[in-house]
Length: 159
Image (cartoon, rainbow, N blue to C red; front, side, top):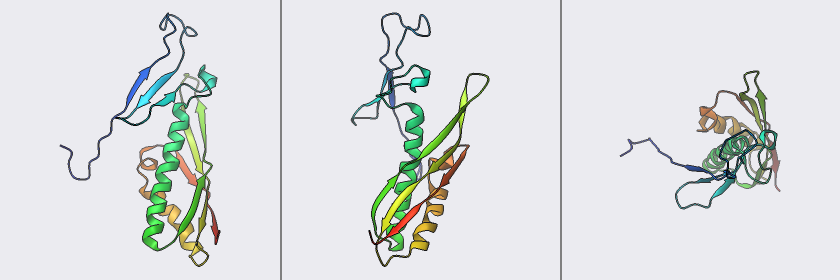
């Protein structure tokens, strides 16, 4: 049984890309896989097309970027509700940069969240802006990565 404040998660990733030869050689297999978490809908995954993946499926890099964006958004909405700021819309067009290394690996070196947030006409836009910093400091995913996560928010009043 988990301790108070401890949360455990599980995911199942199944490779579905065996084209009959397994991994006999680098181009012999598809990078396709399926991600499931309990009874939730399956996520169709693959590698980035640069690494022989299927561009119609989500790749791990997109899922990492999406996780950072969604976690920040959920904290931000929570903080706005607590502060009496009414958010009527929130859309983030996040961007991330991954650098390949000479060894063949790679890493993200920066993600920039770019949320456009609409708040009530009489809400405090300065407070709404400052809550992004607090959301970042509380975000479980941002606190778990070793690269910069910046936020360039656009707050719009009365829309």
